[in-house]
Structure formats: C-alpha cells, structure tokens
Amino acid sequence: MNFEKFEKNITDNIKEAQIKLGFDNRPISLNYTENSLKNLLRTDNVKNALGKFPETIRDTLGDITFREIKDGYCLTVSATGTSYINNLGGYEFLTEFINTVRNHGVSV
Image (cartoon, rainbow, N blue to C red; front, side, top):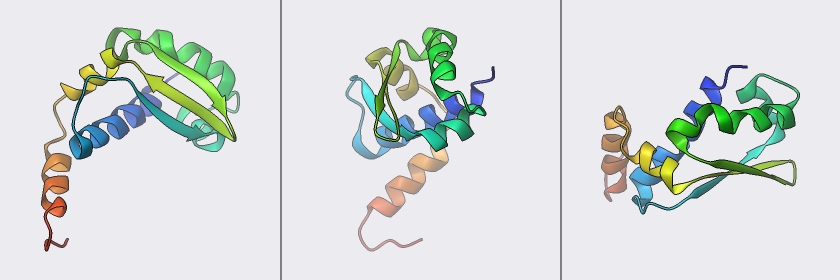
C-alpha cells in the first residue's frame, strides 16, 4: 500500500498551520472525512489502511493515532512528528505567500 499522498497531505497541512500560527512543539490533530481518506489512501477500506499507516511513518512523524469521529477520523500527530515537520525545507514559497497576504492592504 502506498501512503505517499496521505503523508504529504498531513505534512502540508501541519506545515501551513505552523507557518500561520507558529510552532510550539506540541501534538496536532487533523480531521478527515471518510471520503477524503478514501481518495488520499486510494482504498475503500479506510480502517484497514489507517491500521497500517502509523508503522510506515514512525521514523519521521513519530506516533500517530486515529479515532473515529462523525463521518471520518481524527488523526493526531505527536510532538516528535510536528517537530520533524517544522524542520522540513521546501516551503519557502508558501511562507512568503502567507507573510505577504498577512499584511493589511496587500492583495493578490
């Protein structure tokens, strides 16, 4: 099973939050609808895929937990994972873009 698309989505969402809100070395939770997970995981058996996913990324994102919520799942990435994501490069454009539109009177 290939989890690259899902891992990138998690990483991108957390990195964007860190750019906007700052980094504080704490776990972060993300909510996903079941349909979104089916698309990201490329499977109809979301529960099975989520059971396999944490082991594949433990070396980089640390412990990840899932719990069922209405119409989907809540994923929590550990502080180890959020710290790893905070230190990733390659988000210069997003950082510059967010900092530009954050200033009052600037439009895109």
